[in-house]
Amino acid sequence: MELANAVAVVTGGASGLGLASVKRLIAGGARVLIVDLERSNGPAVAAELGQGTQFAAADVTDEAAMGAAVAQAEAMGKVRVLVHCAGKGGSKRVVEKDGSPMPLAHFADIVSVNLIGSFNALRLAAAAMAKNEPVNGERGVCILTASIAGYEGQIGQTPYAASKAGVIGLTLCAARDLASRLVRVCTIAPGIMDTPMLGRLPENIRAGLAASVPNPARLGEAGEFGLLV
Image (cartoon, rainbow, N blue to C red):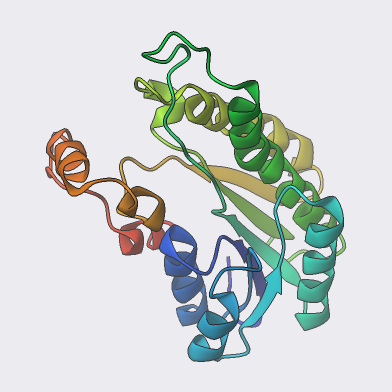
């Protein structure tokens, strides 16, 4: 896709995979709207990046807030790109060591952010893209973020793996659904990435995760994700 003068919406764009994607899109000539939580450093990031970059505070599960964010992006120009990186993790077993079951609210919260949030961003961005005149046979592209956990989840990842598997399942259906609108849908399913979410883990656990990667035995870098966008 030709990015020059296109408007891109990047959720979770204030840090990690999202920020790497923002930088990649700006380098390609796009104008970017960063969507992140109000408590994020999104305004400072947008100001530092310049190039017409804007920020919108929104929880991806909030219909009204995300609708307002997409409307803000439309005011910037033709929305042709969505990169949805906002997500949430958390480690709990189905039955904890003390015998207590995983709180249902924990499962529901992660699925809500990762799966329902993905669909909310997708549907709103796709509706904006559907208004565009086609360029080279397409009106826009929506890029979602899944995870290797969606294919091969580990102990303690039940809600996270389920939510990411849901994103994987959503992708093909949405791609077929939106093909007639000339809007592409795809998903990147990265391995273990060195993101702020992973940064909250103890260093010994991070080192163990890096060592578990066959080759190269290290965590993935956000910039490597950005190269795929």
